[in-house]
Length: 485
Image 1 (cartoon, rainbow, N blue to C red):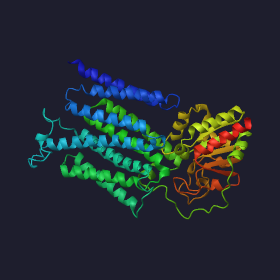
Image 2 (cartoon, one colour; image 1 turned 45 degrees about the vertical axis):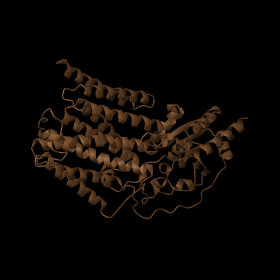
Image 3 (cartoon, rainbow, N blue to C red; image 1 turned 120 degrees about the horizontal axis):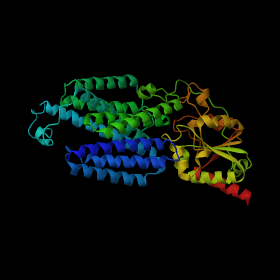
Image 4 (cartoon, rainbow, N blue to C red; image 1 turned 60 degrees about the vertical axis):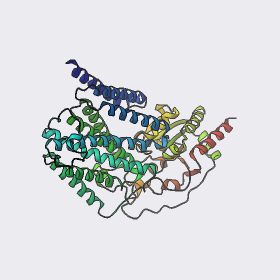
């Protein structure tokens, strides 16, 4: 069947094309759903084509693994709440990095086996050559393939352990930040040690103890790199590890000679890298600071906040917005927790019917992952032309009668502009404080995910509507309906 390799490569090419077109469609909320479906078809095609590779072994085990993975993903995808979507993304991303690292480990151990370095192991060892797949030894890796395999294994291992820590932080299983003296130096030493051991492996001086040490160092570096990062910076971390996973998959695809893995990994790596740069810019962080810094740490004594939080009743807030000319609604993670997106859109529709000009303002890192708020609003059916990003909406706040903030905290905190000692100093924010009136729906008087007091809540033009997001918006809906009755 001389035509089979050509057919397989054609399927890989078509799968890669579907990946690229799917990613392109994901760039717009209007076509994102279709883009995900296209990319899914591409992955299905690539997986099916792989089963027909002439040197494929253990197809039964592979089918079993695919069925287990698909079943677990289907079950968790159906059950996971929208508020838990960021940690699910972090977990699945880590699995991708771990898979790439596992491929690298298998290739490295196979390379050691080829060199005959495992023949001295005891007869009962599972690493004996007799315990490996039959049908002959794999071809010797070229120096370039060996180097890329090591690099992919390093990046994949870091992405795996780092993503697991990110998952644990978002899930609330770990403290928000873990810092110790000399942490940056320790991280750099760990990375340097992993690179040195990797160079030794790539230069042909491979052994099982060296492979174990390499992966231990890489996994530990990913863990310690993520532990000091605060929750406010988690969107940057998620996009960074997404880029890492893509690069790791691309490198391992080159080692395996799998075109689909190479192209898919490169696309994901490039998209993740660009997204990381955009997120870092939105947080006013450098990529180096993301990688090695305990970013989110304060530089000195925080600026004192004067004044007091001033409460407002739902009925008064509703009247204020019902008779306004322009209202801007700013959603945050609290909206996701309260699952208030549908009520918010119902309230916005009531205002629009009264002739109020309503817009939704989205900060690039609102929520726990890039695009989190956009997904929530799309789920509620909010038209895309009513959703504005930070750069477009900020000039409109001075002419806005009321800015309604629901569950957002750090992304509207004016201390980012005024307090050099603040952990978020320099981060671009939504300038809601420039609106004529600001109403903040908040469950209580606590701080945001970054643990910082918000000066906006104490401003003269701000009123606080305390309560659960969905219940508070429901009261606003009722109050507006009473006005129209």
